[in-house]
Image (cartoon, rainbow, N blue to C red; front, side, top):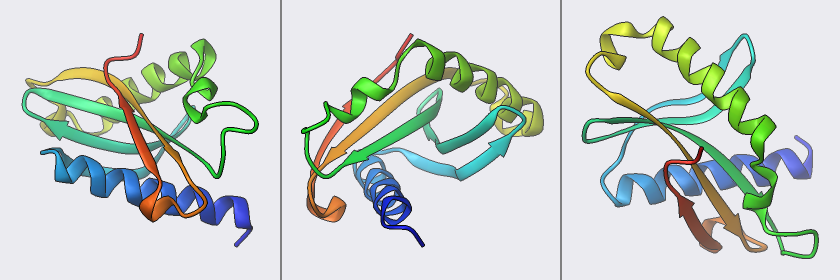
Length: 120
């Protein structure tokens, strides 16, 4: 596995652990739809949350959350619709939200975590 892919995988694991620690329940990891992949799908109260995870070793090339721009948000909204269509029994009664988790540090398992909620 390429070093970059390994960094991303470890960041996604850290994000899942963080979210579970603050009361979220992980429903899907790396779910693939027609428009790409959703890193995490989690549930928190009445919210069904689609989470984009960005991991960087340093901020030398900018903050990881800067990579979640309008194009990526549109793709995540399309993917959220696809996921809800694939799992209507789970999606029913939930409000959909898009979040992003940024992780910075040479080792994602102990890096800094920043969680942005309800991106639009």
